[in-house]
Figure 1 (cartoon, rainbow, N blue to C red):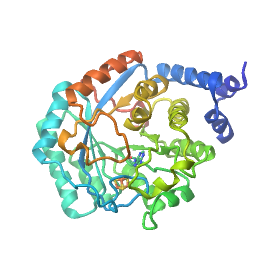
Figure 2 (cartoon, protein in one colour):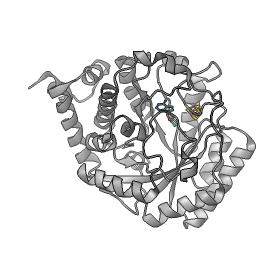
Figure 3 (cartoon, rainbow, N blue to C red):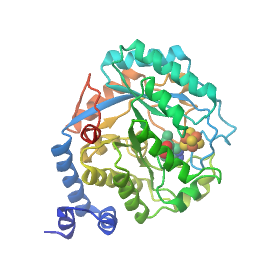
Length: 357
Ligand code: 5AD
Ligand code: SF4
């Protein structure tokens, strides 16, 4: 038995095991992927859940050093999708049998924003007879806001920690971004009864394999229900762009991301893991590959086409001019090719959450 196979037999994977697994190449990497595939089959099967993604607004008060829509970027046109357009996208998702939608936007903490979202949530629930599942990805908020949105119909929340290592976090964000505050928000989300998702970027400048191993253990300690993670992709109009020469080549960055997905599936077994758009950006078959080794959620972009080019978090974001119908059709083909099957008309709550309850 190879050394990698022996590590994979262990009951609990520790930091050093994870680092070794993250370093695998060739045959050893394939051993890891095959093992992850088996764990996936055993615990979550081959169903894939669709979450229709609506990128509500690119207005953001934050200034993350990696992100193309950061407040400090003057070169983008700021938008907020019309309410009726959101409802049209929701209706589309509902009619097609997507179990849920994701509302994502840049971060704002003003009262007007909180109320706009609350109103929108109520309308969405009304429109879909309370049938559609709603996931929010709207950044750091206070407890009252989280609770109000929860009461208005949202049941899942994604808030990526981005990098669980404090020092690395500090290098990626301006000083007024507070790591502890973010951690506290993750706790508040749990307290206000959301299914909680987090995630990190992979292949960031200054990031080491030790950091990534700790990211995986962080997810486990937090006992998360869902995860969205993907490769870091440079964007010219951001401060981190100056470190682009230090990055792993794109193929390696992609494979590292794939290993992270595989390892999280092995570590946490029954959580929901997204095959993210960033994975597809670095490899045209990226999402399909992620589905094979561990992912079970995909977020087809339902943002009205006219807004899409203003929501460029990173370069070369794929499928910017693809209509929802085209996206769904292509995804279906890719999902089938990966030996999986779309679960229509199901919410697809993570089993982890259901068991936790
Ligand atoms: N590369 C990859 N992912 C990015 N995000 C923001 N900027 C980038 C980038 N340059 C991710 C962050 C954020 C999510 C909405 O998009 O992880 O949480
Ligand atoms: Fe704003 Fe999110 Fe981009 Fe940070 S990552 S600048 S919070 S949209």
